[in-house]
Image (cartoon, helix red, strand yellow):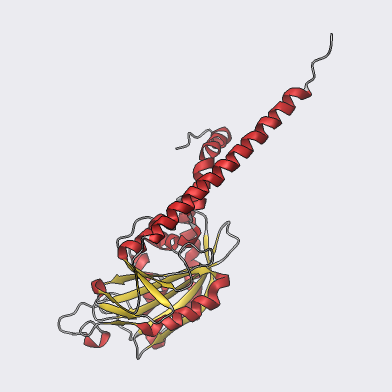
Length: 309
């Protein structure tokens, strides 16, 4: 009587695993194709605007040159929430997108527009701010923030340094700077490029997010955009009425250093940092995570005995 061949079950096992891998790969490609089609359908429905664009909620306006176009609040939120994977945010007023760069491009970038009406921000401290010392303080705060991020289940996010040191133009009442951020597990560092335009009752925020490799293009684009945004007459910084208008409880330093978020609590600051990585949360990442969640849950139960959600 012949001896059973113990290698046959093993060969069958590997054959089945191979077929499973092929099937999963085909499913992933099919799902990815559907995701891309859905994303392109969303973009095809956008209402782009050029030239003079009013941002009525902030009593401000853009006079866009030939290198930029604008999306209103509804379309901008579709980009952030449906295409880039961010949580809902009704504070978004619009988005400025460079022409020739699509919101689905790997190397694309865009500028998110929001407005704060917390009051007139005094610029009396402008000449006294030590940005080198501020950077050190912000990096020290990162240690505490990252501990909380880990406890909340997120990876660390490190402030590497200034990608563009802060600069305040006292004549135009505009402040701009850029930070280089390193996210745990990511091979690319991220740049957050910010502009703040001070007004009578608050300030307009312009925030661009991109990979560090795109910094030269983003920097050039943001400098072009800087003179294209202004508050309407009556809402400008010079229109401030000391007798009637509210004054913000912070100055310029807080706009850069994160003091506002810190006042709202540690996890509010964590949320702001997560939004800074929106370009990394693409639909494909969400798709792959959804596909492999059942397998991850199985391994998690075997490893630590927890029942996965």
